[in-house]
Image (cartoon, rainbow, N blue to C red; front, side):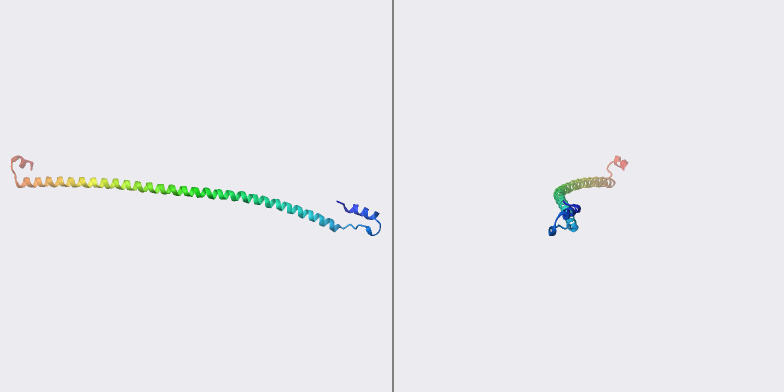
Length: 138
């Protein structure tokens, strides 16, 4: 690219109307155009990098969301299994407690029956004293 001095030398050696005028403005415009072209190229590279990053992050988000959905589903299934197991254990222990209570109640009834029989025997022995041994026992 020509600089101002090159054009000045050219203009000195040119004759008549064919002299070229050096315009500093066109040089500045050219420099500014190059700067904008570089800036656009840089912005395009940046935009492409952002687009690629967005694609990568979007894919990671999709995978993470999918994994979270799977984990949530497994957790829900595990919770349901635990709930069912707890329910079955509760029923088992309630049944065991019921059996224990029934057994205790049966033993209490048997014991009360035996006590009542003994009371009845004692009452009868007071009413009919048959021999001396029974009197002694009383």
